[in-house]
Image 1 (tube, rainbow over the protein chains, first blue to last red):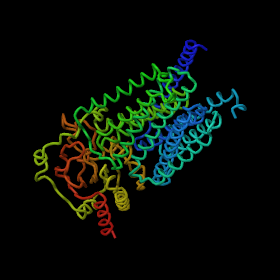
Image 2 (spheres, chains in turn cyan, yellow):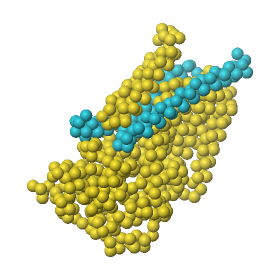
Image 3 (spheres, rainbow over the protein chains, first blue to last red):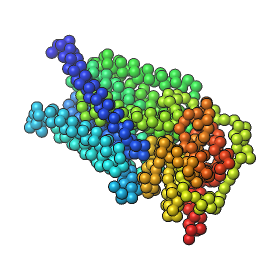
Image 4 (cartoon, rainbow over the protein chains, first blue to last red):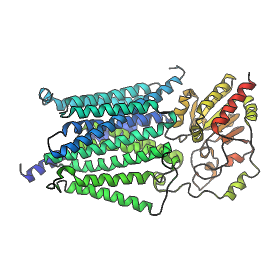
Length: 116
Length: 480
């Protein structure tokens, strides 16, 4: 592939993917707004901590990168190190976030006096 | 693995990501009620486990050792932090976790760029979103580290303001954006240099954005942290979503956007409850100019009635309805257990007890509810501002502990000043108001509180925990 052809190809594919991703983004924003505005004030801390755990979804990004950047070029070592650190950080976020949220909600449940 | 799954892997991944996205949405929907919220958290966590698990299985992994080492180390640290945290320390921990999410996004974008460098092709969409993820992720990481440090008392939590502050911040933002533009325009630049995979402009961007993250949060005072934490939460979601654009990954976009929306909504709610605009939190200087001492003396001089736990006990003894208004000060003094015990004692003597919770009481949105839940205060006893305000006129005693600005009646009357128009709890309408506070010093707003000088207000000076415990003891003694 010549330079110009490949650039054009990459651009076209990139644009299609971008618009598809933008669609997801806009729809998710609407759904998020509808749900989150219904959450009562007293659950805002668990909401934030739970949402925070969800933001650790970047773990998937880290997994993909840590996994796929293993090509035997000199640059890949750096990519692997970065991927490793990212995996650690994101896992702390996910595991810690869900656990903290869970223990918070447990307190709400126990203070509910067993009433359902 | 890849050979077996072949072309299937792409569609399998896409389908599983859709399922995970649905689980995240359902998990959030369950957060709308305390009864269903634990289930929602579980559903959301299983969505995460599913998405990560399948990604690990299907993706072409060439360094499984590195990957699993990372997962194990991260999980270990996460479990350790989550199980050792105190309820009062949760805001800084959530803040820190948040930063990690942002930091991971920035690193993933960098690693992906290096990967593309190895392949020799650069898609404009990818470099552009990588630049965004790098800026947002770095700002989120360093901003969250500073916010957590301030909340934990490791960093001075006062508002650090200096001349030319906005210019300094603007310079770093411009540098980060220029580096991003350079990355988009010439991602291959310096490609023939031995340090081929370094993608230097990306790292210039990361460093500039990191400094910006620190500079953005350093000037903000501790009392504004709920807003900052909420905003950074939103950022970490947006960082994840932009990483999703970089990697062309649907679940990252869906999940990241949900978090971004949640953080933004909470930010707006917090700002409204504090009577602040977002620009004011970040660039303003509220609390800088405190009122002159003279003015405070005018209001307070000769009008302050002090009281003792013994007297308060007698007042409570003849009350039918008591509303407790806890504030930031109660959280700091860790007085929530004593307050809860007092409420139980009152209830046992047929007193109707409720808690009035201002939206910004605590150190993150809804933090006071968690603190009281930890102290086993029943969920049905907690009332928010709109619910409790109409009931104050039929209330015998309001016990304010560690709250100041959120009960300042001048917010309803003043035309100007930091509190004008801020929604407050109208505790002054009750028959008797007891205010537990360490001194007459103004709250975060720097405005004196006329409530303290009102005829029906008695000041119970002292540390929140000591005074509440004392009150519990006196109450127990007289009811034996």
